[in-house]
Each structure stands twice: as C-alpha cells, then as structure tokens.
Length: 155
Image 1 (cartoon, rainbow, N blue to C red):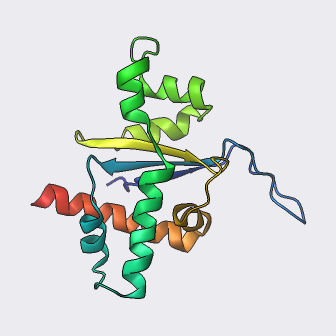
Image 2 (image 1 turned 120 degrees about the vertical axis):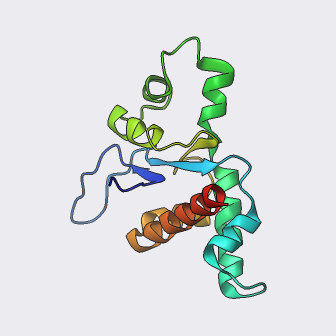
C-alpha cells in the first residue's frame, strides 16, 4: 500500500554550503486539506485539551495553515481551467512547481479536498513554516492531516 503524504515540501534548489542553505523564493509547500476544515477538527485530531500549551500550538498551526496558503484548486477551477489542460500543468507554469511534486500531491486528493500552496517568501512567518522546516514537526503535521482525513471518511 502506498503511503499517503498530504503535505509536500517544495525545494527548488537543495544545494547547501558549509555556512548556509541556498533558498529559492519559490520554496514552500503543497498540502491536501479537506474543504472547510475546522479548528475543532485539528483539536480532535491531536486530542488537545482546552487551555493547554498544545491547544495553543495547534490553534497557531491551524490559523497559520489557513491564512498563509492559497487555495490552488479553487484558483485553477475559477480562473485557469480553460487555459491549462490540468492542475499539474497550471502549477508548473504559474508557480514553477516541479511536475513530479504536483502530480504526487494531486493524486492523493480526495473528492472533497483542496490543494493549498504557500511559499516562504510570502512575507509572512508562521507556525506552519516552522513545522515544515523541521522533519520531526513535518511528520507531526502529516499525522494530524491523516487523522483529520480518517475522521472525515470513517464517520
């Protein structure tokens, strides 16, 4: 069975030197998220108790995710579906997202999910970007998203 990865890091230039990593302004991430996903679903997926440090972190993560991202699915359907043959081609030409990455994410979208996109150069720092930079935290976010998906489709 293929592992579902609902979030994909985009690194245009993965070269590193001894002193720093070469960042490209197009570096960012794609994420599959159920339409109208709520903060309550994030709390349920993480089993966070109210008024705890974890609930504050989960709330920041949720708000960061929904405020720093563009709904690419909606943008494509509304404005670009006649211009580009599919969502993957649109992502390549409009946002320079490698086809291999976009096709991987698109193939995992459920019928009532959207694809969200954000770059690190969006001028906004958020908890989401911090989560994605750390492999451990990225795995945690991945697990939260998988839990939300399970709750949505098993109920």
